Length: 300
Image (cartoon, rainbow, N blue to C red; front, side, top):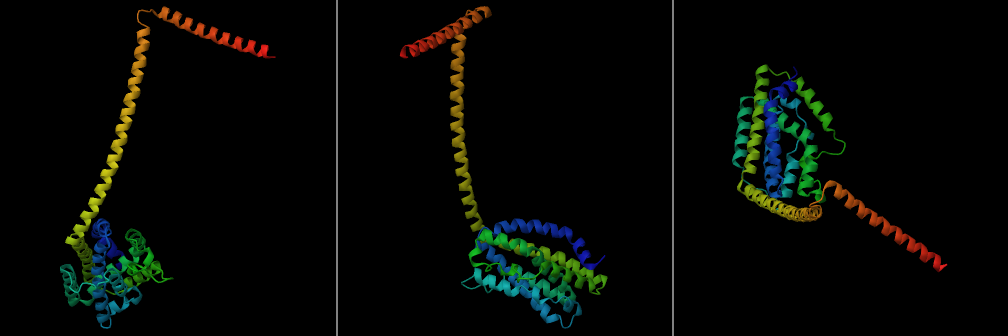
């Protein structure tokens, strides 16, 4: 089995769990720019850490040199997105999870520089695969169309750039690496850890005080709308119920009158009465028609 396939297969279960968590967390992050920008700030630092380490180590590690793709670097674009969302200036301090992430990277590459591949492959391919999907959603939900691509530059690619070709080249280069099975196993383990670190990073955003306050405001607005809708539906239901009851009462009243007129009559008597009523109606109609004919003749 080629290494790219081995990476995919052995990390699939963790990947699926991470995807579900990310999708639910994204719905929270997109409730407000101030929440979303906290996620952008964090991923800016992650890509900056990874890309800086790649630049520092690639000259002494052939594996890393083989996976050196400057056109996949995203830290600069993330920085521009952060500056857009933080016009007052981005936070200077790293968050607790960013510090944990940084410590994890440094410890792993200290053991073996090739371990950086676990971080590189996961994050760079995530942008290549998901950037084009997420970008239009974020632009629409946060209303970024007027200043596009500001706010989503990290998810955008230059005109003519093919993400499909880039992923194929990345896969081919990865499969060409002459790694030992021990190194492969370690990289796979790190890839799974990266998914968990990313989940914790997003959780740090969605569970922050600011995020909860904004989420509650959003929830309050949604509840208000729901209450209005329910009140409107309830009012309509009451009107329909009253109308239905009135029709039913009218029908019962009419039926009662018919029943009163039939009291004491046999079936044959009812038929004779009905026939007599019909005969009188026919005679009246014939008389009216004859009268109209006579009036027409006299006018001539």
